[in-house]
Picture: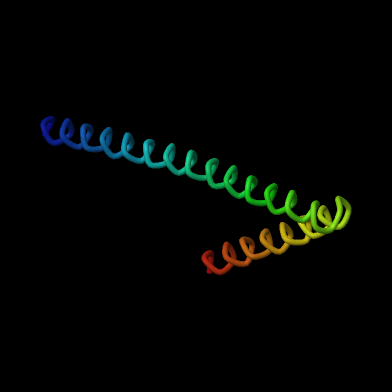
Length: 81
């Protein structure tokens, strides 16, 4: 009986460790994705600032960011159903 409990304990420890590493990898991936998206938005703003001027470029970048956030919210709601 104690051998079974020991084996279950070792398996639980392995599973928790794997889950922890998976969560850490997901966190790093999320941060890198947010950073990459931020750089893309910044580059788009810089391009538009040359073409349209600062005020219109900020407006366009803000509207695009709101549409992007809305798309992610829609996706999260859809996945949650």
